[in-house]
Image 1 (cartoon, rainbow, N blue to C red):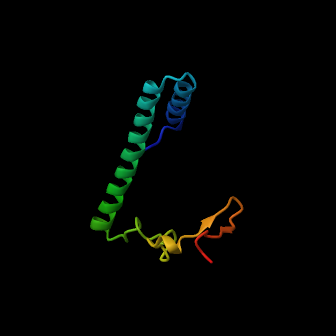
Image 2: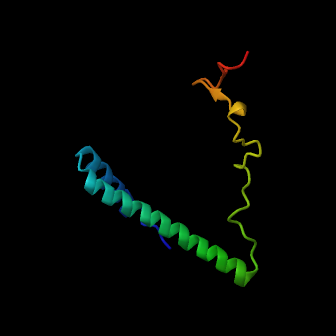
Image 3: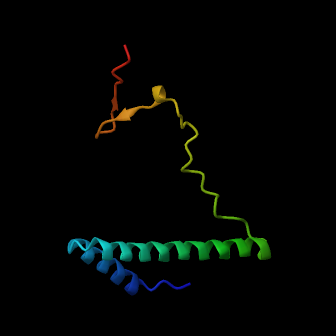
Amino acid sequence: MEIDLETNQQQIADFIDQIQAQNFNQAKEHFDSLLNDKMSDAAEAEKINVADTIFNGAEDESHDDDSTVDDDLTDDPDEVEILDQEGEVIPDEDED
């Protein structure tokens, strides 16, 4: 699974050229192709990881990174803080 960077860069350049030329239908085709290539590469990497886990006893590394999980997530709109551009909390107008 070797990535041809020159081909990938050319596809991205073609995509950008189509957007600049306002040829959005052609740009969509380039975008879809780029996205499909990325998804295929990711699926292939996952297949290799699963096969390695099954046949070689390797540990599953695909879901070990829990650093992005936020245990404090809430669906309660009263607990949501809204931040301004500087990252400061904007006070809720309903609070007294």
